[in-house]
Amino acid sequence: MSTEERSVNQPEEQNLSEQRLIRRAKLKELQEAGQDPFQITKYVVKHHSADIKENFEALEGTETSVAGRIMSKRGMGKAMFCDLQDVKGRIQLYVRIDELGEEAFAKFKKIDIGDIVGVEGEVFKTKRGEISVKAHRVTLLSKSLQPLPEKFHGLTDKETRYRQRYVDLIMNEDVRRTFQIRTAFIKHVRKYLDDRDYLEVETPVLNTISGGATARPFITHHNT
Image (cartoon, rainbow, N blue to C red; front, side, top):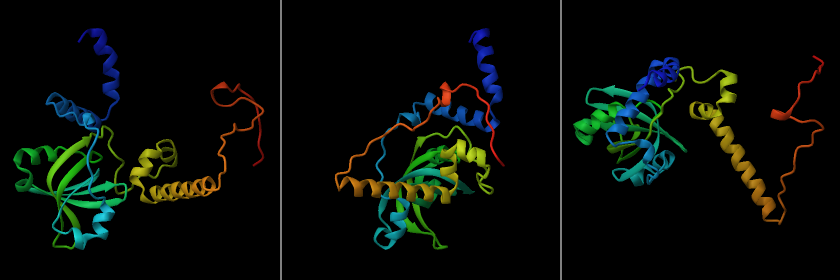
């Protein structure tokens, strides 16, 4: 690398937090080993978390495959418990070294909170009665290069929540549920009108002056 290239790249590296640098290093290691997770574009999901919980009696002991984001990891020597979040909720994963094998288990231990994984395994219930999936195979589907907000306090800053809504939807279940209801409502209204041959037309917003990037500076006032 030339001196010029190093001087260009150095400020960006210095601005990254230590966690981000570690995650980038892990991604580079995967890519150099020919295991780039961003090249995996399809993964077959047999059941979602809610489906497994609602139909546990029928699915107990059967093989399934789930996919979602790792939200927590709890290590216990040669076994780990994780919470996986998908589009319908969360489900616990039980990962053991004797099920995956030493090499695969070592790779799984390097997975970070926020990474998206696909898991093939057996539906079962733990001694504490938690419906879970005992992992037989884990596939890293996408690497999270940005650490998620600290889980105990969640994402509470209003400015961040509005500007980074995608993080808000990951961390706050109530917000995610609100948008799910909104989407279902809009879909229902649209279908109702479509069934009655209404025509949907997108009209421009009426405004007498330019807005956004084309707006010119102006002076105004408001009553408080």
